Length: 455
Image (cartoon, rainbow, N blue to C red):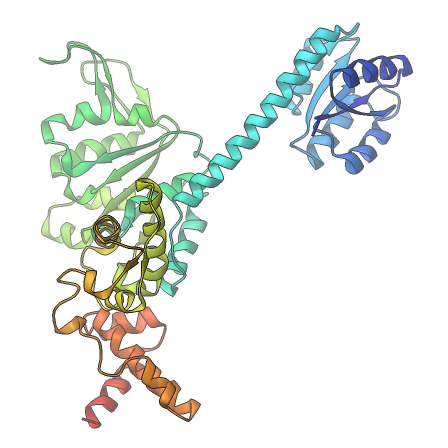
């Protein structure tokens, strides 16, 4: 498919000559003799690029450009004029024109400008596609009530510039949430720089975060830019913030409050314009009570709190997660994808997953490599998942449901089995089970009371 170009000029000779030359170059050509006609034809033909004369009777080039960009912002526009001035060029550029060419026209310059503009548009479209794929890659998998609530929080908070504190157990996906937030923000084209706060010793925290000048201390052989500087106008992800010492917390708090810092050994003040996203697996309010976390730093970071639920509270997502991971490992290892049997999937769903999604992913990677054949069976699942009383399959399996004659009796039997399994997954925690399946706690208590009476 050839790129299409619309030529807009009130001089018939220019329309004729440009049309002939650009057609010979392989472009599909449309023409218009004034701004009104151009806008009408753009709606009909949707050209890739418009060559637009700036001086025309009626609707001039600047006004036409405004309308084009308002209704069709992806169309590239090159202004052509016989009265090129700095003011005109600046005005056209601010309104979204890609380039400005003066009359008399040089055909070589016109062709070069057209190709540059079309290449730029192609790159923009590729970048949008790659950004979309990155967002999809970083998206949270699952449609359980807990996951849908998390997705809604991310969708609302991500596009803002607010600072965010992500909490949740180890392995539940806090880093994935942080990356999704960054990709949804207006800073997505800027860097996302992560800092593992638990891994930085106190004596290196300033150098790591703020950088240092050459010769600032013994061993500083070269200048080093810190994490704050590397993040620029992007996002700074402070992972495991709850494991940072009080001394380090004080240093980072000062920089966050003042939004400026100095490299070690440097006298120049560097301004900071980062969005801060922090994460921790600790109960920060409990840490404040114990005196191990600064309350002022907590309030600085906790503008929007986001809690990532553990896998046991969104166990309905496990089949989707398992399929996603097994397909990913198949691509990585260039082999056929494996599938879990219903019995194996049942076993995984009955486990409490203390290591959360990370534990599930590690297990499935091991199984995808070690299991022969394309099916992963119940016998392939290792302990502790495949051992212990809590993971034994209930005596009443799914198939006996079909031997029940009345629909109402089958629904009641399924509900009882469903609640029983969810209680196992949530370690018999009534409140957590009620939240996970979307009912009131009284519903769970009535179930337990009924089971006790029927024993």
